[in-house]
Picture 1 (cartoon, rainbow, N blue to C red):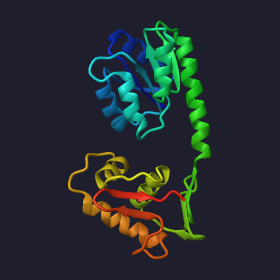
Picture 2: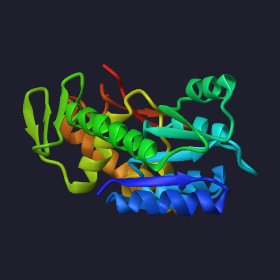
Picture 3: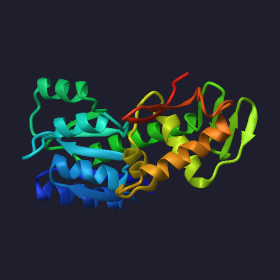
Picture 4: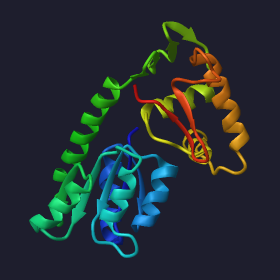
Length: 226
């Protein structure tokens, strides 16, 4: 079941879209501002976001820009205005689509279904992840390093998958833990360091001088984009 996050400070709009999406078979969470939306993106892990532009606290554009720093989730922006400027700002900030209030339920559902179908195709196409001599077939849960099959524990596999999906980006130990374990990171640097060490032992030719899984002193880890 696809999960959709709806963000709007108008309670009536939230309830209306919530009922509409649930009637279409979707799992729905709601948020009333940008700050709550960012929290729900982490805890709910939605497949698509519907978000209003004008909200108190953190507005939709600001929240969208924060989301785009780490996530490629499809985002449909809502606005009470029909001005071209709002649409341009939203699309430039990383929105995938734009719907002007008032809108019909049929139109919104059509757009939601269209983006989720497209996302499904993209996910299927991206099931093979690789960098240099390291390849992961996420359908078969198979990892190879320089042509040899590698056996990883479930947590090692999830860490490597996360880093493969975000090649070239540096993540702290806390960020890796929260993304992989989906819970708050408290005193976990040694845990992540140990997992990183084990992964290196399995994918690197020389684990002490890694080519792929690199430590950035004082900052964290990244997987080289090769």
